[in-house]
Each structure stands twice: as structure tokens, then as C-alpha cells.
Length: 167
Image 1 (cartoon, helix red, strand yellow):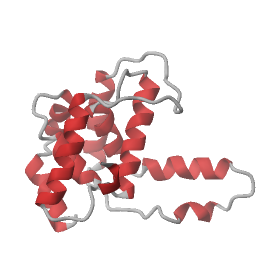
Image 2 (cartoon, rainbow, N blue to C red; image 1 turned 60 degrees about the vertical axis):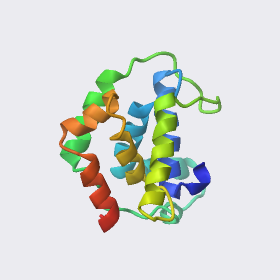
Image 3 (cartoon, rainbow, N blue to C red; image 1 turned 60 degrees about the horizontal axis):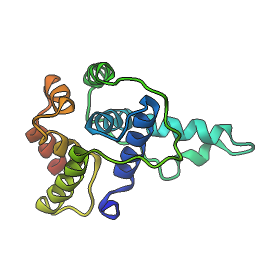
């Protein structure tokens, strides 16, 4: 399935796994995906990679810019902050799970990946991008993560419009 995901979408999934592991969650869920979407949108993946590369001996920091283009954020900084604050209230912290351990995805997240892939096909696009994932999250009406995003005024229609216009 992930072969249809763009590099950015794969980075989001990686971040979701990382955040799920930090909280000791039993699986990667929609809330972890939303946190990853917001943080990647705000440039956190770029920052994480920059820190990792800077910690390596004799690695020029200019190396990090290769393959990590900066994109115009979808979320305003205010919306991002509100979403992250509300998501933080949803997480229960348990013992962290090492990055090396396999972690399953929740049923809702599995449906979200499938819905994002179907949306990519419906919109006749080459790859699943982070906004496809966000639109798919907003299709999961009964999820708390969907509610958190909707509370800041983001709708599935707005996300689809942004996908179609390339915003």
C-alpha cells in the first residue's frame, strides 16, 4: 500500500509511529496520524532530520536540504497549536515503545489509509500526499481526532479543494 504514498506521506506515517511509541500506545491511531500531519506540515520532520544529521560527525548541515523541500503549510500556526494542544489531552502516557519494535495500526487508521488511496484515484493523482490522509481522517466521523480537526474549522471539502488547487 505504501508504494502509492509520496515521500512526504511516508514521513507522516513514520512520525505517527514515532509519536505512538512515545506515548506507549498499543497501536498507531488516527490521533497519532493527525499529530504527525500537523507537525510535518509545520516543518517538524525537517527539524528532526536536521538535528539527527547535525549530530553526526563531520556532516555538513547543507546536506539536510537535499530531498527535504519546504512546502507552504496547510495549517495556520494558530490552528496547528490548537490541534496539538487538544490531541495532547487525548493521549495517555505509558512506557515508551522503542522505535525498533513493530507496532500495528488501528482499524480506523487502516480504513484511513485505504480511503486516502481511494481519494487519490478519485482525484486522478499520482501519489497519496499528506492532504489525502487528512481528508481521509475527516471521513472518520466518529473519531476524536476528526473532531479535533473540525473544531478549528477545517472541513473535508476545504482539504479536497486544497488538494485540487495544489495549495
